[in-house]
Image (tube, rainbow, N blue to C red; front, side):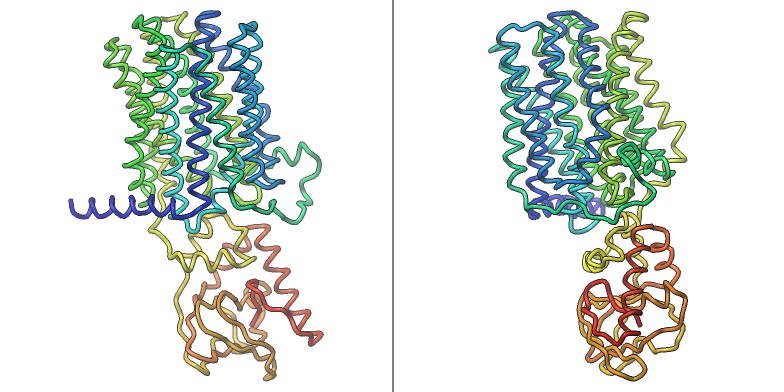
Length: 564
């Protein structure tokens, strides 16, 4: 019991540390406001559609938004990989807020419902760059993999708080003021998110060497799909996420049907059912803080699917308002478990160079799956009735967990890494392009080495068996007995012998007591050679040192290292 409490306190401390990181804190708060805007609009639009055009309009209006977003997402991912992600986020949120403001005016002015639905679709296109750009920016803002995991839990809690407050506020506004006021609240929250995002530190657009295998807009766009489909873990993640997203799309429609049709309650009940979902998701945050931090990702995904599926069917068994609230709370708990874990895994496994496009591809799948769920809900209700439809949807998502339980074990991860060692590696141009998951594995493989003053770390002519980085201290480099340069904290050496498979090209000697970290040859080759950009960078660094040595020219020593 004491051990569990200690782990929980450590996990809560990790969440607290997220808010000590200026940019992570602002990203989390902005996401909460952005989520409020999105859900306030979705709930208000669903009620508007039901009242104006009936049950099918709810599904069609939702599907129109989701399909528009799905079509825009691949282009949105490309934007996130080519421009400042901070700027993409801020402008996207601002455009969305402006369109929601126009939508609020359209509702108040009694414009035709088709225009309101069309504005909803346009708003989804406007904000489609947000999720890919944010997903790619978070790993850059996080200082360690542990902080990234904690940031995603905090991100989820902000999302759920935004969802909860949006559900309650729209429920109150629609019941007490009128439908149009809910649209106004959505526009105001979107404006707040944009203001927060403009205060983030400026980030440089991603800069990479051109990919000779990718040419033309179409090829650039499909790199995100290729990045997902080329990785077995990401393909599995995509499948599980798609089923859960289908349920989310169905749930948004079923909330209206359950509240207004099955139970015969008022408009506010739709908002309160969504609020129950948000409360369940918030409760899930505490458990996720422990599970995600300590690597129990299979449990988070599989149990999340089982809880979501079982809970979704509950109103079909006992059609009462109390059971409906409990059902949506449990669905929120299970869905949040899958969503947060999947987001963390995507950021850990994805290649930084194509991460925004990979997230955009998954976002396209998410919106398509939600569109299918939005249309399937009214179709199934008309075909077999409300209660049987709930059983069908619930059985679908629970079945995924049961069938894929064994396969999901690939998502287990190891113990937290040393923040200092992780930062040393990420500061090197050789290792910086690696995905978080790979870099974390490399960090675990590092061996601490201490060299006394005058001790040789590498000797010219010996076989190279390790790559070194200087954690603290200083070394001097000799080639053929001639002094060449000194290197200090954060710099590295030993790459040429490993990359070119040649004997050491220089002798490296400590000038004082020096702490180093060493990476065994096989782990260096495995990590670097297996990644195109990292391998290319390492080869460029090695070539630079060899050329400089041949020409006997001094070389400016940076974090890239120098080879001995």
